[in-house]
Amino acid sequence: MLRVLAYLLATAAAAGAVVISVTHDAASGNYSVHDGEAAGWVVRANFSDQQAATGWARLEIEGRPSEDEDADQVMAFAAGLAEAHITSNMISDFIYNVVEDICAKPADGSRCAAVNEYFGRNLEWTRKKVESSSERDPYWRQVGLVLSQMDGLQQGIEDTIPGARPDAALWLNAFPDAMDLKIGLPVNKKLAGAEGPSGSDHCSVLVRLLPENADLLVGHNTWVDYNYMSRLLKKVTLPFRSGAEGADTVAAPTVAFSGFPGSIASLDDFHITSAGLVTTETSLDNYNKDLWTFLTTSNSVLQWIRVSVANRVASSGQEWHNAFKRYNSGTYNNQWMIVDYKKFEVGAEGAEPGLLWVTEQMPGLLVGDDVTQVLAHAGYWASYNQPYFPIIDDISGNKRQRADFFSHNKNPRAQLFRRDHVLATNVTSALRLMRHNNFTADPLSSCNCSTGYSADNAIASRRDLNDPDGTYPLKRLGFQMYGAIDAKVTSAGLAERLEFVAEAGPTHDSQPAFQWSSSPQADAVRHRGQPDRWEFAPVDVTWSW
Image (cartoon, rainbow, N blue to C red; front, side):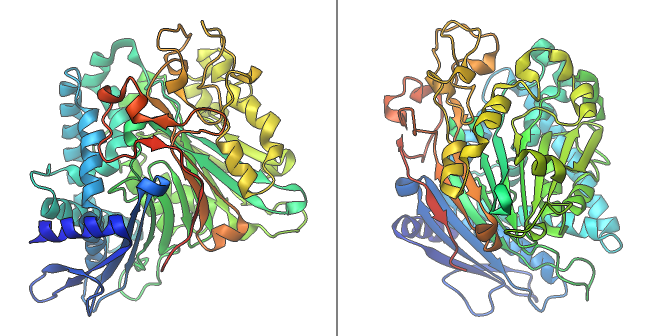
């Protein structure tokens, strides 16, 4: 019956928005999923599948505390359950396209076995820590609620997807952590040989402070393989208590973000929280194999959980940093930007300390600082997968790569942002900049390669446009079914309402639109459920609830 309901909901979502709700019977402990808003709901969800028209689907989840003694746990589980039921088709496609593909190659068998063993032991340790510490430490209470949401997601997946794997919800959220574990775990380091880091940059970020503080813009684009292009815009409201009974509500009960099917955090990553923060990142590679010794199954919380907790409990950049740095897993290592819009006032003089905080993670080390004055002096902050803090540049081994490509100041995107940040004068122009790729004509896209340029040397990568038979000094500069699959921009006014502007798919401003049916690699890359032609206009991301 539940699978029939899921099918009907998915069919309705393709035609327009659908609403479901979840109720909980305290006596039996049973949850029930209803079409529409049932009396006594603890969570309701609103879903609209607009992928064919815009490249995006939209999901809103709203919880309200019940009279249950464990009301927050009930609400968290119900939120995961609702998401799985109302987006089951997208989750099924994403599991096939991405999760199963991660371990599809014969060489991945033993690597993924090691990852699964790590996940099992780490999750066991984390659950035991929640059980023993959540009553006295608010941090572990919030970790426990994230796990409850994941458990509800898993239950909903098993309700609606025949033969679903028992760890589907975990992998839907921990696949970025898995990428580092595939390389860094002891058995996998031996298998990887000289492979080193993933060799794939992920994402570009621009924080733009306009002259005379006319506005503060934050833009992000997601660089990833094209099989990941099943996209959801989400707004999740879960008014959890910050601590035990009687405590205040968490700092940010609502978080809006761009994400993937089944993702509890963004994972791409771009969040706006109701505490006035925008949290976003670009990834950092680890070239120092010795650092992988810090990967442990105990005293370690996976990155996606730490992000979810930090987004929920923080009301400033430093608070976010302090929450995130606890139990550093050393997986999915990133440079995080935390913009505090509460510190920004249109037309004010100067920049208030705390406006922009930057945090960088490597295995065994996490550092951060207030870089507001850097932003104020330059008028912008850009992030492009190169460490800012010298200690991270050094211990990661990035500094020893020597080539300009690995330089924070000389990297092609560093130069592009330095030259072009002035073009971002409002949301529209900032979005255009985050989609910029004119690699055949832009001298900053040149490289020492057979073609003379690379479509990866751009603010929005399009590796699929590189020559499959070309020679390139780095693998990442060559041909791959990979690129910037979106762009998002918010402003002071939009962020106050948890809104932003978003555009889906590889950039087509100066390049041909990507189309699966005309791609010679279509049969080699999983893309079930995706639109065929990615030529969509920007959308205003507003919310119904």
